[in-house]
Length: 86
Image (cartoon, rainbow, N blue to C red; front, side, top):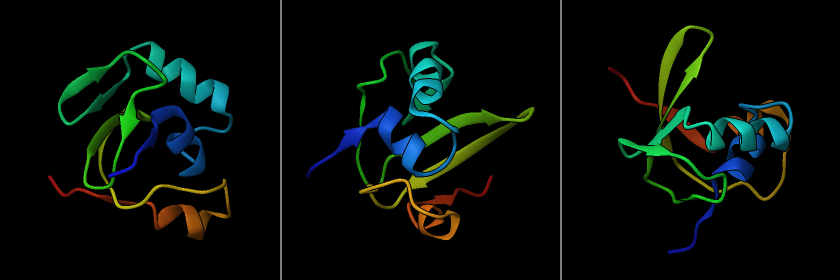
């Protein structure tokens, strides 16, 4: 199974405006992948992984459905993940 860098995936899924911001968030340990704190922007993500991140005071848990080829429009980015219900 193939994967993608977490910073690149976050940028393609439109969670961060720039890839540099996504790299900073991953490097600062602000993300969790399958319950484990992410400390490197090069961490690999794969479809089926659970990603947890903070968004505006809330904690958002996502299941990765696909890996993006590019940073497309919002409807295209929305197909890369689904929000996991609490």
